[in-house]
Amino acid sequence: MLLNKLAEDTNKNNYPENVYNASLETLTTAASDYFARKRRNMCSSVNDIFRVVYIDIDLNVSIDDNNTDLKSCLESYFQILQTDECQRCGNKNAPALTYLWRLPEVLIIHLGRGKPDGTKNNRFIDFPMQNLDMTTYLHPNSPDLIEKENSMYDLYGIL
Image 1 (tube, helix red, strand yellow):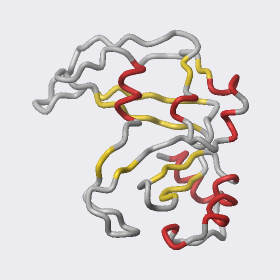
Image 2: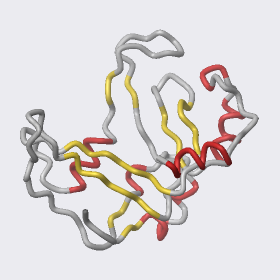
Image 3: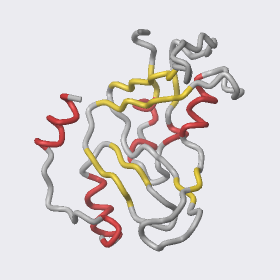
Image 4: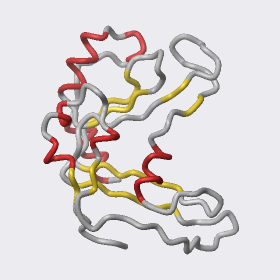
């Protein structure tokens, strides 16, 4: 939380407040200055552009789904979702995608194991100790696709 606030304060910009009305050229320029971006809808421009030193990905681990390894949990997180309505064009059931623009030095993956009744989900999730490849989740125009060695992560710790 503190790191996010510090990053917001130190990364003031002159880019348009409403990115839905910004030109593609402006957005491309803006995105090249930042380490991460999230694409809102397939029919809209970039929604949330911000600078991060680390990325924290919250993965919900349900007892009902078939995700038994980290890769399938990540695929579920980055899958195409249907939104109620696109803010830009008003399209109903507009597909939404999430991509990573730049990969940080530190990637924090949180496995959400809480059940609705307040107990803990003790489901086993298999994950690699070394060489977790995040290139699959990068935006197709990401500069990190060229530098593939920066897209591999080794496990540092478990809490």
